[in-house]
Length: 274
Length: 319
Image 1 (cartoon, one colour):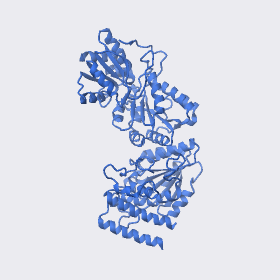
Image 2 (cartoon, helix red, strand yellow):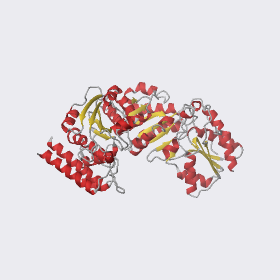
Image 3 (cartoon, helix red, strand yellow):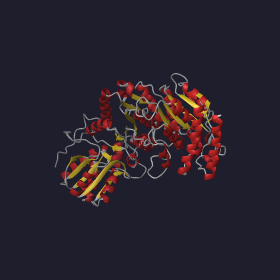
Image 4 (cartoon, one colour):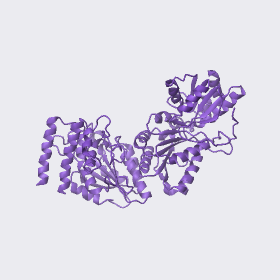
């Protein structure tokens, strides 16, 4: 528990480090999904660098591909590649680009265009059923990408095929590049939409690692139904001046802002360690 | 001059039917063969496939983007996937999924565009695919294949199942005559198939326009003009060796396709020839950039001169 919380702080520091190094990145969204990725890779997913080519590994597909910095930092921590590779983030000919690509070990699918993760995850989950394999398939979606119609096409197929080996997580940080999701294209009430599409829904605090663990541990939420976790999160979580501030959708901290952010994160680390 | 007698169409089948028959043969031997359909199993001639192999068909309903995304996910998990849907929807509505989930992610899906070109002639432009070669040619990592006759269709389907990279197969609805009496050709993606040979002109066609091209060659032969006819079944990668050879040995080159004159087989050939200094009299026969006339596929072919007479006239005009 304390270990996971510590990791979340470390991950946030590294996310900022590599975004500052690259002078680019999706800061707010990476910070909002950090705890979700932390719990997935350190508690839930049955996948490791050694088992990454196993047909029985759990699959994780990041539909909100733009928050790749969070994914890369977690994959490096899990030993999929040496962390120093991230020093090349977004540089000429680097495989570590602004969206996940399979050229990076640990990445299942090339994503970046929104509304693509769930259909691919559905295909993975159908294959598992056909092959009678027990792996689970997870996909992380942003709430801002939910107006993409392909998500809802795939949601129908998932329920139709009773894919209880599939779990979608919505990182509901309520902000997108233009404004709040409510102002841009309101998708609330979100739980009712997923339920109407035949999914079993749980809502959790997306920064409460214990609540996330419990939600993942209880999959599938209902036998014969795909599961969705609506994770209520804060965009820019962990750095006070970034939280709930649109500027940080893809804002890159200045030297001073970075120092301030690190000192805040260091203080929160002290609280974790007490 | 090789034998170019037109074969009696009776007894031959639409390429879509051959595709389905071969897919059933493959599926019987390999449970990883999966067809994914978007309420398209009827037009894809896959009803018998679905009955025989209910565990090997995934139906997503009328949702082409999802069709291709799901197909990519299945392929990523080791399945040999054929994603089957009318070419008009598949390569327009789901183009981003083909580009990203199949080609860019390198998931070995065979994307199968059925009832392609103006097969649904009278249904109007919503149902025409005159853009698919152009759209797919400029997407990296997908082989674009347009079989002409039943032989090529059977070969292409079997080869696609064995190919561990993305493929686009395009079929029409009409009964296709075999182009040769004896089909002993080696079939490979990226290698054009020479149907008949002559040194006056080369007619390079694909799909359902190869047969009228062959008939045009016959008509020309009666007038003392000997033409080579090539079924350039692979639009990408283009058989540039064959193209260079044709340019060296023929006085003029005409391309024929059931596609817009923009961005398809003709422009692919023209770009290669021009950039390699192979300057021969050259014409592209296809569908012009205008509101496409309505009517049956044959009506539309007639209207735009995708006929033996029309093609022969274009060839003569260049000589």
